Amino acid sequence: MAASLHVRKFVSGEPNSHLVCGICTSVFSDPVINVSCGHSFCRKCLQAASCCPLDSAPVDHAAPLVVNRALESQVDDLDVYCSHGLKWDENKQDYVLDKDGCPLILKLGDQLSHERLCEHGLLPCPNKPSECAMIRKKHYEQHCLLCPFKPCAYADRGCSFEGSDVDGHQRECPFKGAQSAVIGQQTAARLANNQALLTKVTRLEEKVGDIEAENSQLRLDVQSSKQLVEGLEKRLALLEDSLRKSDVLRLSRVSSLRTAHESWLMPFQFKCIGTLRGHRDAVSCLVQHQSLLFSCGSDRTIKIWNADDLSKGCQQTLTQHQSSIERLAVGNSFLYCAGADFAISVWSLADYSLFKQIQVWDGTTMENVHTISGLHHWVRSLAFNPQKERLYSGSHNTIEVWNCRTKYNLTAKISHSFGSVHSLVITSKFVIAGTYNNNTHLYDCVTQKHVFCLNGHIGCISSIVASPSGRFLFTASADSHVQLWNLENNLPIQSLSRHEGSVNSLVLHGDLLFTGSDDSEIKVFRHFKMDMGFNPIK
Image 1 (cartoon, one colour):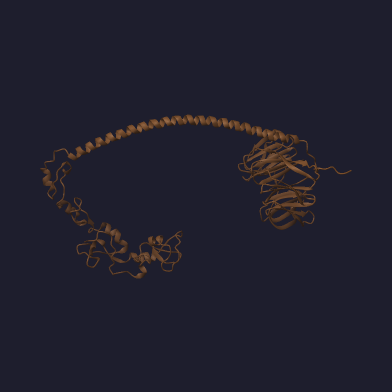
Image 2: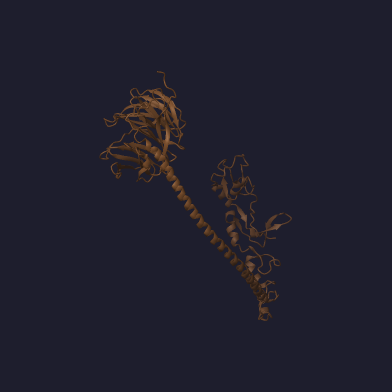
């Protein structure tokens, strides 16, 4: 039997062993290199293998496969017989040369392209392949003319004639003028099929009617639900307004408590007396100017509050930045705000109009006065001493002191190992730094020596504010707490925990403490004198 499938039989017997895949033990087909061990295998074999069979090195299926061009070229140059020149020998159980087949010897790389066009290729009989043997391509046309099983052209009308002289038969075929019985059967079948389709269409129309009725009912239900939701939203708005009024009414009682220096005598405590709501995202910074409180945050807005009359709520909202607003500062009748959009906006405090969008800058002309260079890490905090003659900058493991009267020359450096300085405040006695290691560190203002470490937080110290006299200190942290300290003995007084996110900013206004947090709220705490519970003996 001649070979009807693609067969590789080499002219010189089995090829050299270095051309044989170590997995399938056949001549390489699309050889690639395993980068884990350097050995070459067939692509399909390597993709299915888990380790190299030669040295057990694992196969990295994520690594790219490199084609072994040298092996591929050697394999393509091997001499093989055309598959259409071979036949199977049952005695030898192998393919042998077929004298009636293709006599050509080919290169393995050209075998497939040749065999697709080879005239010795085998094709089945188009009339009755079960009765006729396979036919060589070069004999195909002759076979079609002489095939003894060639049917009559009117077989679909009932003629059963088969033979090589079909042309002569067709001239006198009795079925030549008759209507095809098959056509009649096909017509009847189509009519039956059409009737079945009509039945299905009727049922589908009924289902569509039911679905449309259900949709009408659903639309009515949706409309009713919308009306119910609108009613609930109105009730919610009324409740929120009532809650806001309740909060601010409590705050309105404390408008006349401001003094230049606090008169707090131990023992005392701070209690939360209300919440300022209005921001839609984290509150990143608070700043005070006279009786005004400014707040900003990730919602890209600046809100203005009257700290002496909090019952009025938010007085005005300023919008200019395209991204979150990170810091605020007040000076020379202007409000300065810096955003994550790399812009600094300057607002007039007279009418809150945008004055200018602008490194040290002149507060009157908005021109660059000086740029402090030579810093080797992010500066996360800045603070002036009370006389505003020195500027302190906090960065990684360093606090640097700059002389504001001599073009910001570096006059001192406080080095430490507590990480980045995230907050700074300068009192008459101490340089106070809140650091990444969750602690607050006190340094002597004159000697710059480390004096004490205030520990109690479990998060980075994000903001610090000292009382006007410098006797008390508030520290805010990413742990959502605010800690009150007595700087006369460096002991904690109270922990304030009313936020549900990192506390990012603090402002002290008389007896009021404002705290801004990631939870989008500003809490208001008030100083209260504590009753000792007994009267001294006179």
